Length: 429
Image (cartoon, rainbow, N blue to C red):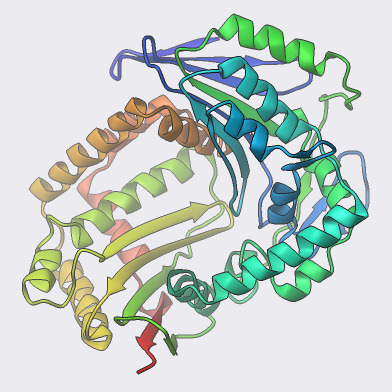
């Protein structure tokens, strides 16, 4: 199926294999770089689930999705990373809260790299010895993360905002949860989530679509897979109290300068598709209006030396949770904290001007359009949209639809002072 946007002057093709694997091709004629990603709709949030055709819930320790990602690089012939390196590809994998990605980018040897990526994502090799060895490696990695200030400050903030939701947990798990993972746990999760019907492949660049589809059909032909018909995974979500868990965490670590993160727990959740997309767009625009580099608040704080180039903001939305965060390094985090709260109150009182909104909307549109200049960036965005039931080409249309009243409403809903928490890290000395 061919989908074209006349406004963006972009096209993509969407296909589905007989085994249920969704495929997207984003053509970039003449571009030497090619990007290929396989994404599994499985991440750190999926701690309790019901596999297809099962009646009982399966509960797993935290960190299994991340453990699986690590283990997929181990094959009977050794570590597949060496084979990718020989083909001159940049390759990697990552685990998030809602998905796991396997990808490569290359300017040559595309066919060979695609074969390796298929082997990486669809040919598990689990042994008791391999799992035991990987436990030690991942436990060391998790302990290392606990000593990294950027990750520690974000984790403390999430733990302050959330009582029960697994977004408060580290994606890699804990040393204790890692030890509780067994080879059977990994096999059960792989068999449940790594079915082609729960995955998507995205190809961006100057790629022969028909040739790739033929190669994929040939690859999967002799694999014994359950029918994709009715392949539905039930995922259990926790009941999260609306209020925050704790207001403030203030710790000392080996950092050169203090840093602060402020977070707002969004009560408005439970959306999918277009509604989720509109809330994401509207909240991003609202935050840019208040905290962006062209805003009055940012420039006042920067001129006064309260913030520097490390200051930033972000909004994260999922059907089961949402949070807005802002902060960075600051010589006096307490002053920054007070002035940000004061600035938000002032923004609510003075409101956002229509000319500022229109400026940020044009900026948001330009930022989105530039995604299509990068094969890997547009592929990642496509996967996010697809897993959330959103059509990527609708983005510009919905940015245009954002009205001043929508932004003001989001400001009141999202930046509710009773729903905020703060995380601070100060130098030990």
